Image (cartoon, rainbow, N blue to C red; front, top):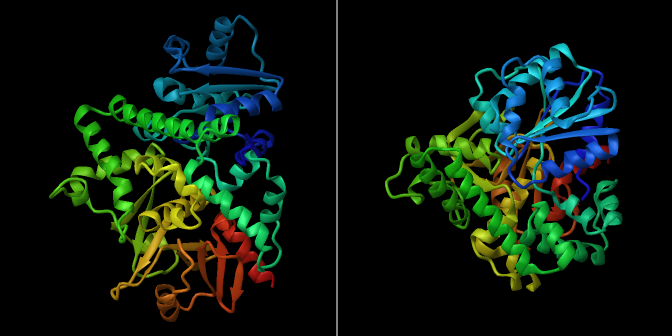
Length: 440
């Protein structure tokens, strides 16, 4: 399936200042498939080593970590000569062998002509724990679950993708197109963006089988909690992880430690949240009471919301049944719009928004997300239904006078003075919408 990150990999390959690449991302988001496809299509030779699947490969990196020595060891193992010319070296699941990560420093310094990609399901955690991390010696990329645009490509809707990615004016789409996209979005909210789930549905069309795969992915995550943490921390991680869907299902989605365990405190679970974040399993939106640039400087880290990386996994954890897909509006509003807000968070992150923020006032007004672009801040309100109520975002606008205010909802694309409503399926294109506004 086509991934948008493929183009970034091409840019990396052709960059004269290229460094070894660390590809991060949660388990099952498709890192191995993407890099193998990239290697097979863009290089004459692909060398693939999986250090979790084959623990014996650790011996290749024992002792001297000089690139020539490592390459010779790989050549002996594979029984063939390895050259830097048009060859991609793919080191997978490198969290299993600390020395592989360390060796990337020497590859960059001594043999930059080699093209090397290293990946791992828990690479974010390994990087954080690595004392000899090659600072400044590697490039970074992160692969997320498939976005809605990638879902449309996978389902053969390339013309719809072209239409959405090349909007020049802020004006409504034809209703027949708008309705078609909303139907796709409802299915995407249920299936989510895990590649194996989508590929299974494309192959078999069996919604029950898709849910089974989602549950298997969730079980794999639970096993990671025990495998990569001690028993005490594993229990805390599991408790916090299992509380997230129900925290999101509340009308006020602010995360509360007491909803994990009665009288629980931040000190007990702070490391757990950091572990899940580094594992790529959650997205966190922090509260901002004063929206000034940069938002990170005005953040209250004691107030936040936690979202799962994938709406399909959220639905599986809440045990949402598949008949909800055919209901006109129920999936959008289910669990106080938990799916919609979670979906928007995921789309924003996958589109390049590095940090998520939301705003609250003392008068109980709340704006779901604050977006930064070109030293400006734009408020974004998320609506799961067709309501026209703009009380909270208007309260924000009266106080801070933003250039425009944004709403993501099931409604069509429309602009009314300083207000822009974009349909939920256009969430990842929010920057393009603003550019269209400026050009207008």
